[in-house]
Amino acid sequence: MSRHLSVPRLPVLASPPETPAAGEVALYPTPEGNLHRLTAAGQEGRISVAARATLPADFLHTNTGYWAAVPGLAVPVQAGLYRVTMKIRTTSNRGFQSDVRLRGPAAAAGGRIDIISLQDGQAWTDFWYHWLGVALYDWSPAASITGAGDGLLLVEEPGVLQAEVGQVPFSQPADFEDPQDFSWDVEGADLDAASTDFVHGGAASGKLTALAAENQAVISGWADTEAGIGWRLSAWLYSPAGHPRAGVALSWYDADGQRIDGVSDLRPLPAGTWTQYSLAAEAPPATAQVYAQVGMEVADGHAAGSIGYVDDVEWAATTGWMRVDAGSHLQITPV
Image (cartoon, rainbow, N blue to C red; front, side):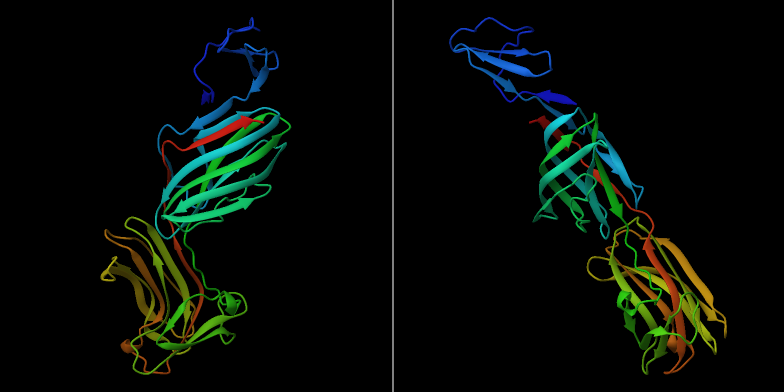
């Protein structure tokens, strides 16, 4: 942590000085810890000394789904009123949401703070009241964020003002308990998203009825990603008559929309038995998007009208990263 004076370089005296000569200014500390100035005309004033913490090296956060304190971005604070300013630059993998927050002493209150940022090159502004502990970007999907903030902090008891970063991984479940929460696409089938015919968990499941001239009857989805990110896909499937080929699959696509590769758990579905299908995989080099599907390969056996049920689908990224760049800083100035 370094201390800065926003005044010209001048001699600093260790005790109350004699009146300086014309054109000079004397700076001296007072017993209460403030820095005062004295001019040749006898004018006195108080100078506020800012305390700044600057991150000396990049900080990498990989514990996806949790907040992490940035070790180099913490400033001790005493009781008093402060102006808080910050500039923090973060980079994270594509397809996730990330954010920054400030935590302070228990006996402290944040007034209004104004936030400005460039998120993937796009300007974004907002403000918050009672901002301690608040996600300042409201969980941005941007991969690159340079953000700055300016606000007030009232402290009653000594403590530390600490910057933290957090990342929320992609997750798109489907439990069919509320049709309004269903966010998957449907391909090659009609879907009853609130069927009560056969249920694995809860009160409802998804009923897929295959359409003619289609080679699959599935629910599906797309997500942005990149090489090295881990993914998990699982689902429970049911068919009263059974099915020769059903399950889950992930396919990797590059930035031009060309399929790179894929992984799957596709196998016979026993009649009258809820069966779980699952897989875990890491996105290969050059990946820009991942495509997920859950359901039946209709062309492998049943004709149009084949019926299958799907329930308790879990699709999520399992790994990720977020970096706070060196040079990011957090500063407090007594008011």
